[in-house]
Length: 222
Length: 222
Image (cartoon, rainbow over all chains, first blue to last red; front, side, top):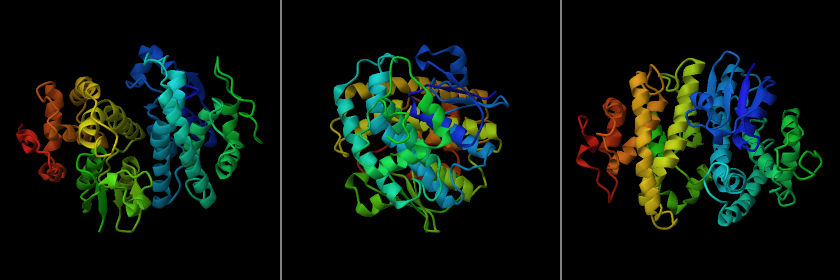
């Protein structure tokens, strides 16, 4: 059986889960409390981070970008990167945009600060970082809204990993009730579309112990 | 003509330059002072970061990971990712290791702190971050040494983007005289090997205005 070691509030893990579901690749998600620094897990990934994917051929792959490239090479249909070189370059630019830029400017300030920092022994949440996270979210929602108005999907004419990367970050923030869905209607309309896909259902049904999502979290007509 | 917008002390830019040189793809490097936020450049990459690569077909590509994947798809010979799925997964894991983990723990603390922070208007260098950068470099050199002793090249039996990503970060640090080459002989021997490749020569010949490298920087028998 394929295994994905993950944490429910990790956006990179959600991106990989959405990619697996969209490609209809069956797998078993396994919760990995990375702060325990389990020795068998560190052998799979010396960085000690999730996600780590183990395929049924025994190959185990660390780092969400390596996993997604692997999935598209090993299970090419449907492609999540697009067909032409130009499409693939644009999808990869946007995946890096969401995982690195959105991740550092928004998700890290809001989710890591309040939900992972203490557990990882990195100290107390910093109120200035949390304020910065909320402030940074607005121009990012505007950019998503602009992309959604300009193109069929964020990366171009087809749904791609760019949509799943963006939706992964937003769905983690939405679980923590951090997104004002009235702020940018075009971004909200795009998120409603991607949230309605079958690939999204397992994420919406999952609950994190000790933290309940807002009522609209699993509502497709929020 | 192909153009690479770059900064000489950016490790991600050096990684792309090494990939282009190793593939013998002619290009013109153009210095981009990202802190000027030039409008024409922001149109190429709204993130405002280097590297950005413009191919002779007119396609322009932002984000170093997107550029390297593009180069391997558009100019596949020699491959910098390896041939089998397992090799490619390991190379991509290590590229992410160096660009993200080594980058955040070492390069950002030593190079960004002292050479980019003021210019970007982000305040003064923080002595605690610089100390952390030097401390973090040691376990990373140990990991590189361990990989170099266990395998022919860092990613496996062939030279790959894993070597160029690692060497890109180390060469930036070496330009600033931040690396103690006596610390891990296996890491030093691997760096001597990769530094001797023709792809490395243009980097070693380049000088940054206002900052001279140590005498050993362009010496192949340092």
